Length: 522
Ligand code: MSP
Image: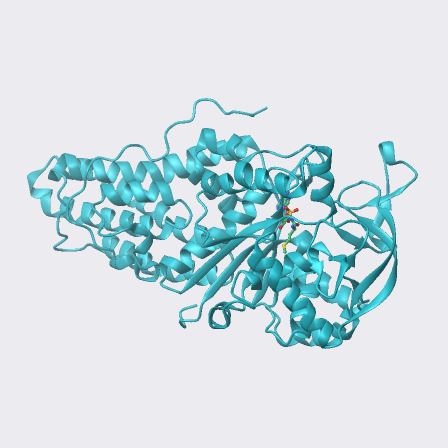
């Protein structure tokens, strides 16, 4: 995207019933890498994340802990969800909480507009509800329980029994949008990504949509329905609106017009809410649908979706305390094809840390800087005559920038990293083949040594710029050792090749030190 339009990217807003695990952090990092890339490319970028604080699930957790739901949410946001962003270096521009005034007021405004337009009516709801999912379930969504739930039907995601609901509720005429949604999916094939998620959703909508119950009467932890304060708004209807209330809907029309529509990064389990209910709500309100909904895969532990409720949750700082935030970010973005499920293992993390970050990239950077210090007192020489190998490397630098940018455009983060890594591998091979330490021994080879190290350090600088969205900490350290001009996060990424240095390098500590003990490893 280099057309000057805004790049507005969101994560789902996270339930505050519990603390984050690495599955939540995975969504955050993916959105963050995309946001950093676009920001560094000079695209006007806005990155939103936040927390989902209403509904029965939070209410029950708070009650079980003897505090009000607002107290509970405040505590979890302050002690767990905000600190997560620091732990994994998230560069969000805004953090919305569904208990913010700016959100609550404009959810009511949105709902009132839909009511006035005739999209809402009263009806009786009878059916099953999963509090874990905060979702109404169809009988086809349930599976036979096992263990303590043998003989009962349970939610396929939470493996826990659902609850029978019988309430008088307000309904949204979602069924009116079956055809408009199918038209949207057809006219804009990239609207839902990846293909597997898209196919599942198209098939679901083709079966025909039913109207959606959008209020609850049996508890009061939620936003009041504006024309009837005996009801609170259904938590998903409330939550989805965060993407527009944070962007100025109802409060700042100019800002909203500039930012909206957004690219939504979500887990595949909640893609249906984002690609069916959400665009239907927006269509009913006469607003643009999102730019794109990308449903990423799950982190699996023992072949199952990792989750706290199944006691397979791993806290992000279990990893970052040992390996650092860059390794966390790099590992999950490169080892898993974005859009597919991936299994986490300590052994794989540790092996890739050593092979790819420490030996592949970190060592390359250290060697090049150390040789410039040893042979040229830290001065970056000019390359007067370039050999074919040098020209090839420079051509590769150009190529990987274009390839990585195109991959980011497709949201294929792992492919973008793969494209950049060709340069890591080529540079390592180049140094092995050119043997600068041998050239340094013979004064006649001085011009060749200059060309080799000038070419190598140029490549390393380009790598720093290109990898900055993925491993911001290490690349900032490297940038400073290279004498890079300005903040690395502001060096135009699509012109990474043109990076500027002061002409002098300074000593570089190992970027990825050896990790002796692997905490949590089996
Ligand atoms: N509050 C809703 C989202 C509302 S958005 C308008 C919600 N919250 S959540 O906290 O349960 O999940 C947030 C995100 O974390 C989802 O995208 C979900 O897919 C993701 N993940 C939760 N467990 C995960 C894995 N094991 N692996 C990858 N992502 C996972 O849903």
